[in-house]
Amino acid sequence: MAAGSKIVPVILAGGSGTRLWPISRDSLPKQFLPLSTSGATLYQDTLQRVAPGETFASPIIVTNEEFRFFAQRQARDIGIEPTVLLEPARRDSAPALLAATLLAQRLHGTEATLLVLAADHVIGDTFAFHEACRKAVGAADLGHIVTFGITPTEPRTSYGYIRRGAALNGGTAALVEAFAEKPSVEKARDYIEAGYLWNSGNFLFPAHVMLEEAESFEPEIVDAVRRALGNAKSDLGFCRLGADFHAAPSLSIDYAVLERTSRAAVVEGSFPWSDVGSWNAMREIAETDASGNAQRGPVRMIDTENCYVHSDGPLIAAIGVSGLSIVATGDAVLVMPSERSEEVKHLVSALKAERRNEAHEHPRMHRPWGSYETINLGGRFRVKKIIVDPGERLSLQKHHHRSEHWIVVHGTAEVTVNEKVFMLQENESTYIPLGAVHRLTNPGRIPLELIEVQVGSYLGEDDIVRLDDVYNRVPAAVAVALT
Image 1 (tube, rainbow, N blue to C red):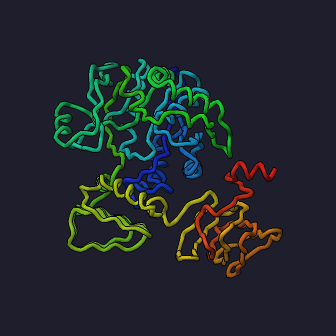
Image 2: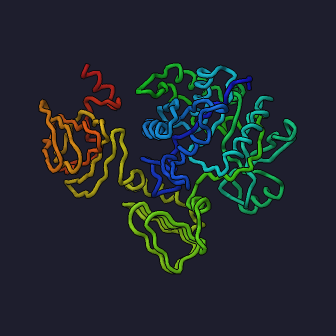
Image 3: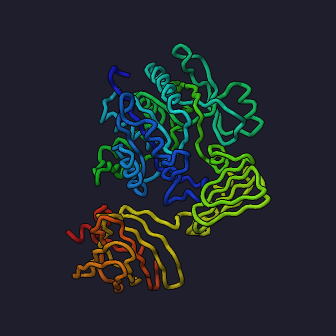
């Protein structure tokens, strides 16, 4: 690393986190939820761990269309202004990371050093983490891609492992002799006895070294990503990669580079670490009582031990049970033996195959302008609670299959219906006929809360035809037709 230069943090924040269902879902995954003991979201904790200053430059965030406003707003809420890079399609970690690497070179020079972090990991000692980063920079300066290995506390089957080779840089790092896949319990015990480390999936490297190795092993990915970045466009402050990104093969950076390169090194991290990859992992990072129970939300327990109980809505009461994980939201309840938490992903896959809405969406859905929550749903009606943030507005839109009734319960609404624009105050209402062009705006300084009653033959969210939108969500064909 050149004198005076800073480490460029790259945070990968596009995952779906379905192993923590029903709290984490496709519409709002775990990285954007306040699941750590800090009260901040996991993503915000990660940002604060590498906040811009003497050591770190402003971060680059890689995410996708669905999460772009979460990534931007949650960073701004803690005073950080990142560069947000948007993938037009999910192509696993290798294309995402290489796109960020190329962008970092554009912003910070070809000799930039990058620190790549998952957005949803918990690290319990920031000082020890920074010390590990310092050691990693020493190994990276010797031309290595440096991963962070964690000293195992027990034989885990949900983590990959690293076998260390010869010492590097005065013993502060070591060559990677081999990466090992997730093992059986017996094999994991053997690994621990042999001195293996857990593979945290976070790493640091000089940009040019990563690109050289990627071009050697997966030139097709690098080529597609270069073209995608070359055709990138700025969109409301986001950097949107071009369509060439679709041509990149979908591979993890582990398979694409790390497991094939001879330039991999490892630094042992002495800090507490978790990838928060299961409800069992959530229990491990939570505070427990004298009976070994961890609880969050409205929970009451009697004669219960070694349980993790989490509610984001209804009261959970447990009597005389042991070793369970119980998780509840407004629309789903999960109950299982804690040791079977790795099977949640199979449950979610089955729910998706059944086209269950609960597999994908939360009861409360977030939008750039605020949020909405379905209160009741029938064959030809849906009742929603809508909250519009101060100064925000929904798209100018129409529907082919439903009409709507709006009742303001808090705040002030500016309503557009065809050519008419008017104001609604608390306890006032209006009717939006089927096919009418309409828009809802909050011109006030407090949140606008209203109840929407939809009536019609089809009530899906895809019956929204956007004609104009401040968040650039109008389809290209419609935009062209309007110009």
